[in-house]
Image (cartoon, rainbow, N blue to C red; front, side):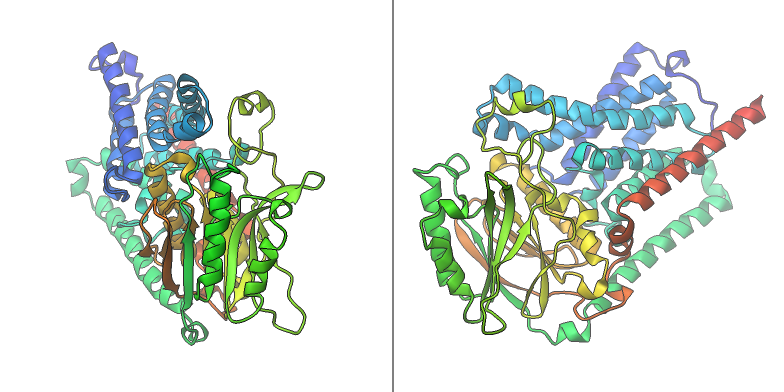
Length: 546
């Protein structure tokens, strides 16, 4: 069932040069993983490249049989290259817009990647230490440890899950699984399949158990595919089908990031352009991006905000726009304001959504890091947090759930609004400004993140951004309308909400159901059980050999 494990340094087939070569191969595989999330030149995810990347990593562990230290080094090399290749564009925000010296900006990006790579180093070190001879248990252990590393990166120290491996699978054979297991579960399944594949030998194909396992996996994948396509139609209820699609106008101001908060250039331009569009658009819902209005209400010319609000509290149109709120005494929030016609004689108060998951160093300063933020020329502050699961904006029979920029990385937090299916959102709206990172793959990567949320929750995701990608994504994760990036304009289109008027489980996905109740704890539990199974398998083999 497998070879006896032995340290790499004791293997006659592998010397010091081979070890260096293995580290280089692991790093190249990490770069391939980064490219799979949004292939340069196309901006599209490449699911098979992510699978190849994991197969190479799993193959190194299986063939070389490293010690736990050497396994940790392979994991660190893989993750460092992967993460640097994924969010290298942070250099632009730190150096170009933040004014940090180039060497320090490079060091900061590498330091962040190195810190996050420790999770994967620990995972692969533990795999090298605990890997059992049983192939099924080894694959299970590898998937479980990979899942633990992804969960740690996504949750500890507020979490930074940007570029998780599962995002490469917004299309392809595993795209039916996010609705059940979420993006982290998809990444773990990819890892487990990679380890199972590299362990397979020709002689295994002659054994009936191999074919049984293969048929079970294919059957499970086929069932997930059928269930996804059937459930998607079940979510489109008669009540929803009777509703006309919601007509949208998504505003993209394309205000240069180095001018966006400048009183002499970007601020007047933003105030004038967004006011003009908000007054002239005729769509049912007009959406302006994150900090479209770059000033606090009390800093605006008297009557500016009141005039826009009056425009939408009468007639048959509504608007959502990004704006900072608050004051020095009570604190500030990154927020969305919503206006709609009053249902009765008295005017309705404005709808307000406050961002919950704040960006480290951008919207709050972690302890002991004030010295670093003082080196940056970026508008920073310690913002107040909104609550998880804030009410939706109800308009024309739809429940519209805002999220601001970075928040759509956290599917479990978006899922909190699905606890009661009868009140679950029918449309998700992301308000973003990726202008901090220039015309880079950050735009494409964030688009894939939004597409993954659409797959997990089976709700359309509408994106209104300052520079791109301003798009409409349907409930299948497919981009149906898109505006040219880094251009000033308006994207007009329609969106069909999902799940309206249903009070049963058919209106929400399995992921939305369990994540809204327990967050990511079911995945933590599965990862723990996988590690325990692998450890028990190794222990039994050790006892049998003794």
